[in-house]
Image (cartoon, rainbow, N blue to C red; front, side, top):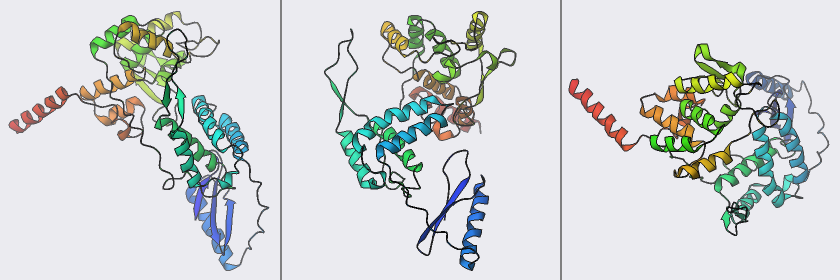
Length: 362
């Protein structure tokens, strides 16, 4: 017996086989436990003959992959209104999927067909970024495993939305293995690199980067700071959005972060501390300014997101325990923090000396 949801906000559904017939119904409740009880009660009624098996509904029309993807993206746009980047990710991932499957009826796409897509996609190439001066690059790059995995994730969600047509998701765990990404990032800025980078940066990048280095916030969390979510008297700001409860959190402010925020509040005209070009909206990103600052500073290349990584690693080296670190970063699980905490060799030797000193004292 399987209990599942079609929509996040909708009731639980249940399905099971009875005498060769697939029974699929809405429980009408939003509690998974209650839905299981309702499903068990209905099965018992069937066995006792108290209710009959309803005549099967007419077979649903099988959409082509292109039609199913169109419907899926329309749903995604509404479902992820609060998280537009998720919807944008699905749009990007859909392009390769549409090129490969297009007119294929979705009930004809099995796990073998998905494996064929992986092989086809991995053999493709993409153009390298344009060279300096806007000249197109002639270099062809391989498609990254992470890109293919995001496309497979999109495909899996699409089939979850079409379980009335394809009850067994061909991309489910155990059927299709995602590619090894090997993208663990260990880039941590030194204090000297930080100084050179900030000196070479321009506003608003300087303030964005300073806040990330002082708080460990994500770039988009800094972009979307609103006046109403800053509490100087309490020494913190509140992040009201995020995919998980842990992401919606209070962020403590040190002296550096407080100074940056206070200065911006003095000259703030709208609601966002980092207003964008569109009135009433925050800035979208500062990637171009970041790339230019890295080049001017002559610091080894790093991502803007590595500033968060740098803060987290420094916090771990300063003795912040992983439970506290996870909460400050907005992570719901400790294992998600491990990728940020990369102690240096010096830090590891210092830890060993501490253990030795404790043993001698004991």
